[in-house]
Structure formats: C-alpha cells, structure tokens
Length: 139
Image (cartoon, rainbow, N blue to C red):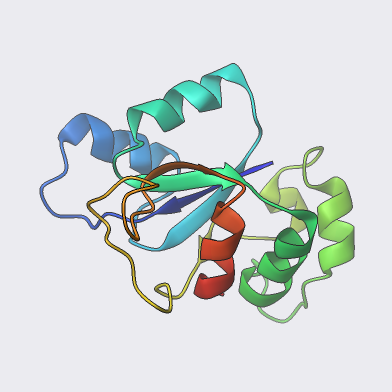
C-alpha cells in the first residue's frame, strides 16, 4: 500500500496537474490518500511527483493513521482500525464507512517543500520507506 501526501499548495499549479490531484482527492495541502501499487497509479504519481510525497506505508503507521485521522461518514459511529485494515484492499471507502482521504497536521520540524527527497529537508517525490518518518511527524 502506498501513501500519497500533498505537499504543495493550491496556487500556481498547472490545470492538468490540478485536475489530476482533484481526481486523486488530494484537494488541499497536507491531505493524504492510500493507493494500491499498480502500473496506473505509478504513472499518476510520476505525473504529480513535484507536488506530492509518496512511499510505502508500514503496518504500524497505517494503524496509527486510521485510528487518529480516519473520519467516518456517519459521525455517530466510531472507527474500528483493525476491521478497516483487513478489508482495505477489498472494499471501497464508502462501504467501510470512511471518507476517502485523511487530513494531516503540517510536519513538526518543517520541510523544504520545493526540494525533492534527498536534498536537505526536502520531501517531494518518492520517499520509499522514509515516508513513515514524515508521516509520524504529521500525525
């Protein structure tokens, strides 16, 4: 499972990139989605790599993300993280009773958002396993 976090804001983004980010439901800065690792999603990520950070999410961080930041469609119901993780790839978010995105806190310690991963504190592009460190700072 790949987590995609939008880092760049909403100003001065080309229309094609903006429509791709809207299609992926990354409409605001510091919002995140979970996607399967397949050829179509990799092509989408390569298209928007200068505006998002992405990488493989660990099981522990997936559990934390769902417990802390998942928002139920029905506000009266609680989120059961264990059940959601078992059915995550098989059912849609609406069937699980969740919104299809996660709202995150800006990263504690800051980032240099115009730099790609590996340059200073830059995080844009493919972070591989280091996305988990960024995600922990944003929860």
